[in-house]
Figure 1 (cartoon, one colour):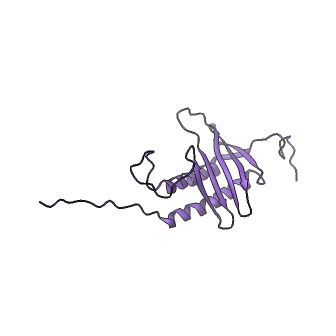
Figure 2: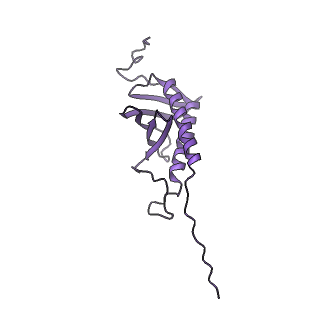
Length: 163
């Protein structure tokens, strides 16, 4: 009797999809940052639609280099106790016009390809999925984000706009 064995196919990342996501995320992030402030070291804004409050989002610059920035994007307040607030570290490549998630929550490094199954049950295409989540979240922020919160020491914090 012949034993049939199926050879397991190894996941091959879709670089076109990942590149398109990263390029789109760069443009979404730039639009959001221009709407909320003149790119300070930190910006916060509220998310709501009518009377429904979704929480606050903070964008903080962690590191700046000649062609790159590292940002921390996090939802700092979400009224729902059963949801985790998103917290993503994003590397922005200004020379390539791309923004890529480099860490998510406690995962300090997101592998482009994961064996499956694995200890942490990461999907084989985890990097693509996390960047797709960032795209959806930034779209949500652009759609429901409202005026930045007045942070002490920032222009407009005293109610007077500079300019």
